[in-house]
Each structure stands twice: as structure tokens, then as C-alpha cells.
Image: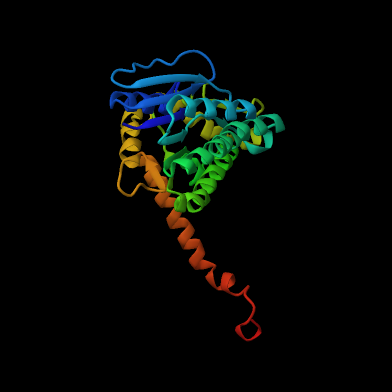
Length: 277
């Protein structure tokens, strides 16, 4: 059986993943900010710990407590996080600082606290839940995309650092899933919107509101996909979830490849001439 440490199991993908793991008889140590998650342990074992990711000391203590409970933890899942939508110009320093504290520094501190124990085990899998916004940003998501892109970059480099130690890393980039992500529980919007952005950010905000409850993605299927990836012989470093994420990723890659080609001569022209090197 697998032992999981999952941040943010009170709702959304974290809740679905915890329930799917428990249904398979696994042990789940999950964190919540407050309250008790609506989970049926079934054949599995559930431990719920309180954690606010903006408290560095609490992160260290909670990770230590999790390992004390389980002895060995097989999978660390950095799932807890939220989105900040709106025009970059209207965001406040406090809004951005809090977003990065939760979505970037929180996962970083969880990983840092867990790594000595994973190294001692000689095995482990770190899963960072990012977003397609971190790979193919859209209008009105500049700061959320920046936070998730940071987690994507962290994951890709970390994977190379820890591979020789027997530790695997996977960055999971979901598209739009039918959770409460677009509710006030998981999304914050900069309160002041400038009419100058009505045709871009304004339209995007309206589209987000219209999409709530109609997203294509099924969180239960996403949870099973993550479990399958974890248990694969060759787990992916980058895992997309959802047909919309797949479309956006391919469109972004095609655009990047095309632009690289158009500017290749300029790019190559910045090297010292061969005779001078």
C-alpha cells in the first residue's frame, strides 16, 4: 500500500485524490486549514492535520508530524493553492505576496522539509499540482500563471537534482475541472478593474464566471490518472490533465517553435564568431 501526504484535501482535486487513494486501501495524511474534510476512509487510513501554508514554522512541524505518523511517506503532493485573477496593473503588493506565499513558497518549504527524510528512505515521489496556466498562460491570469510557472520550473530542475537519490518528481498541469476552483474558496479577484482592460481582462473574467460548474474535467478521473502516473514504471515529469489543457499546450508549443524558427538567425548571430572563440 502507498502512503500519501497531500496538502489541501478539503475540496477540489485534493479531496478527489485523497478519496481515490483511500478507496484503494492506501494511507492518506492530508492537510486542511480548518474543519474536517468530507472523506470516507473505507479500507484506507486517514490522518488529517491542520496547516496554513503561509506559516513556515507550521510547515516544518506538520511534515515532521506526518513522517512520525507514517514512518515512511511514498508520495508528497503539493496540491493546496488558489488563483488570483484580473489585470496585473490592478493587483496589490499584498495580493501578490500572499499568492506566492501559498502557491510557490508553500510547496518549496514542504519539499525542503521532506527531502532529508526522502533521501534517508532512498525513495519517494514528489507531485506538484501546477496548472495549464503555468505552461500556456491566458488573459487575466498573469500573476497566477507566474506562480504556477515558477512551480513548473522548480519541478523540472528538482527532478534532475533528486533523480540520483531515488526520488521522482511529477508536475501535474490540469486544465479546467468541475471543482469549486472558480468559487470564492479558491479564486481571488483584484477588486479594482480599469475599463481600459474591458476588451481583454473583462471578457476573460466574464468567461470564467460563465464556465463555473460547466468545466469539462472530471476531478475523480483526474485523481485516478494521477494515481496511475505515480504507479507507472516510468512516471512522467510533465503530466497534462484535460483535453483543454492538451489543446492549449500544443498551441503554445507550436507558437514557440514557429517563433524560434523565425528568429533563429538573430539568435545564432549573438555568439562570438568562430575564429574569436
